[in-house]
Image 1: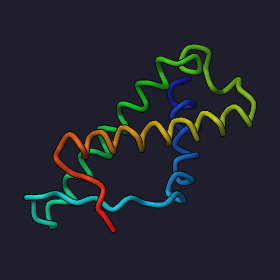
Image 2: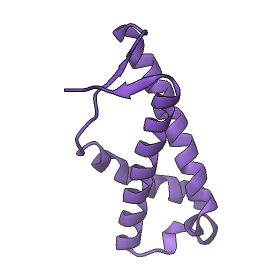
Image 3: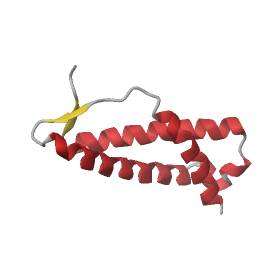
Image 4: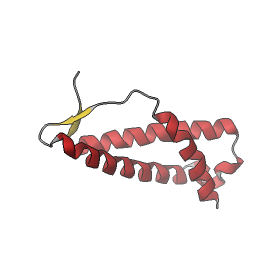
Length: 101
């Protein structure tokens, strides 16, 4: 039950991550049509890894349901930043680079 509360609290903060400036990515040899599939794979992997990080953190052990609203919001924010970093790492590992403007 605690795990559900943890995931619900964190997922509630993820839409805020979409407000940040989005990076445009490119690949030297893959067609642009492959982007959606590759990005989706990296997003799912990053979300799973970020959730694992949360479970291993203090909130995973003590239960985020006992944390203050501020702490919940900060945890959601930190997790969204972690997810974005993991997604970028996955894209780079698959040969993508931020596009030059």
